[in-house]
Length: 261
Image 1 (cartoon, rainbow, N blue to C red):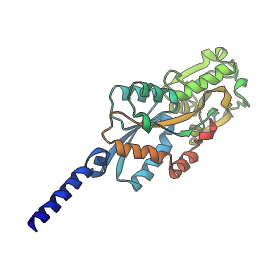
Image 2: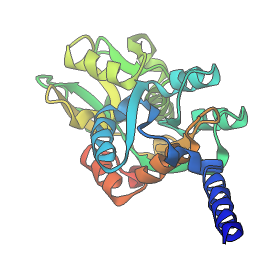
Image 3: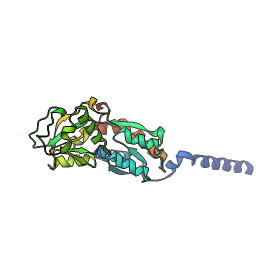
Image 4: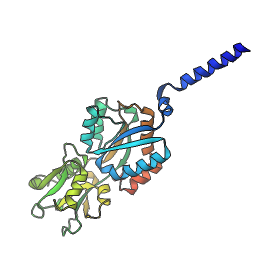
């Protein structure tokens, strides 16, 4: 009987050891903490999603917002981040090429569109992007196309409509799309290019017109787990959550839409 008893104890010990291996290690930890580096345009939606997720899971989320290019640079330089959500495919592609994300975790989670905005009391009445004239405005806010996806999409639209060169002197480059919104809200610039989702959160601006989808690359937000994460399973679960019906409802509430292109 003693021999059987010791066999049972050994069997239980082996099972316990096996269950602690691999990705299951995340589940063994209490109060898993994840850092989510997300494009600035996602600020309000992600704050609500943080509350929703933390109520459902034993996970604490820290949100880090900036232009996608700046975030990608931070991750490439080793800054702590478990999940990266970019406002375009390009910056995610660069990290994937440099093995800074886990390729199989990469998922497209939402989309957006570009709109032209003016201050709430502005008399401008553009019905289309190609109606913009330099004589009408002193300054036009746009995200820096080199690092801000919204700026890149806006730049593509201006070039597609062949009006980029005539507006060159009026352009003011911002560090991210939220700075563009602030410039227009405060009257520092006459008009600006932001995402539809940014325009919806402000009562200090008016939307003049929307960029046609064919004038710029498709606006898709990919998310992925970073290569340096110490919480791979928990980070992967969060990316999967972003694709859920609950998360998609929040995205739509804030003006994001995969079909907007």
